[in-house]
Length: 143
Image 1 (cartoon, rainbow, N blue to C red):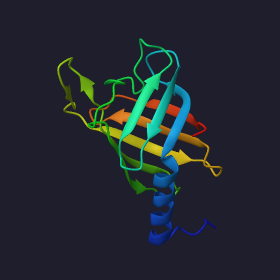
Image 2 (image 1 turned 45 degrees about the horizontal axis):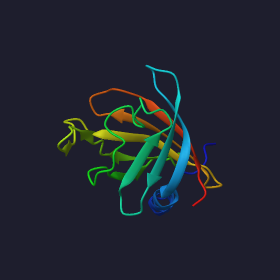
Image 3 (image 1 turned 60 degrees about the horizontal axis):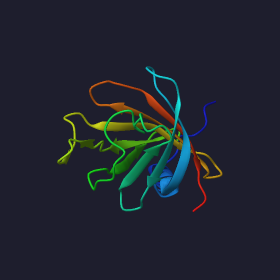
């Protein structure tokens, strides 16, 4: 017999827990289908903004866009599936030297999972035009 499906209220609570648990500073690895793994820093703010850095100055944390800070860089989690993984969107800003802009495609976050300890965050990034996955395995940094 299959386990009972979570109620809408339970799913809403799970989404809220993942959203609030994602806030903070993270460090870990990125894997893509195209290049060797590399290391990144992520900071997700409660107001919906995020910042990124890599340990390799030739790379960009999300593989696309810029690691420079801009108010255009925002993240949202707005759904959770029956297994408890969240999904949402992330705005990937590009630096054109005199201005920042967002691409025509939307950044998508899939399978956002925060472990029971709240110290490990995993997710996959895709573009709405089909490129990906860029997969993240992150560990919480001390404040």
